[in-house]
Image (tube, rainbow, N blue to C red):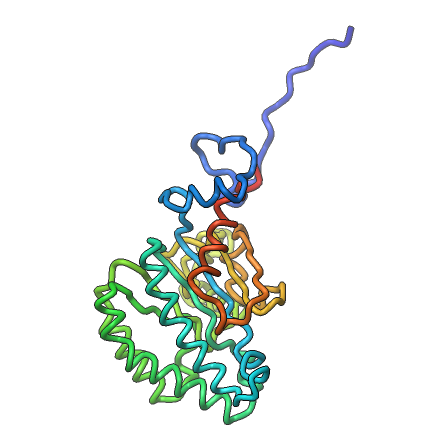
Length: 272
């Protein structure tokens, strides 16, 4: 009979992802929930994602299908944001991040880019009072210094006016790119004089645009494509993804709830 040999404890890397090797009780082993059971859990705070991020895709295709100008599609997308925000507050979502304008979008026509800036300025100006009453606080993610002065002024005004919001934090990713965010984080770390051996995942997370916020639990993409498009690439390492074929202007409260139900049906193991 083979003799049992004592094994030395498994040596784990000291910088292993903390979310996968955090101390505490092990995650329960249970089957994924059915659709009906997931719907029942929608009312449970434990099954509500803390942070939902959305890649709002399909405004231009929506407009083209209706013989409308592309900017009219973007305007329709703003209306969708307005109604979705109120529904997210009702659902008790603490943090909502929306991908509004990527740095890659600068490659579009001058007319479209200028129109997108104008829509952002108008939305912030027109919606600030309602957002404040709803308890929504605005935060911008991206290289704001690259935006036109008028756009920056509108953004600053919205940030100041909604600073007291405590029901929902709305992150608007505007002139944003995930890889650019990581480059900016590394530059901040280098400029601060941190020694290379002291740089870990937490140090990088603390230098991102989203510093201090929990990572997204759920990333939704509308429009039918199934890719990240350079959105929150660091933060979404353990996010659940939900892809919806609806174009963004057609995404409504029922569509959002369908994503929440799907999220509640999943078993999240975090590598365990």
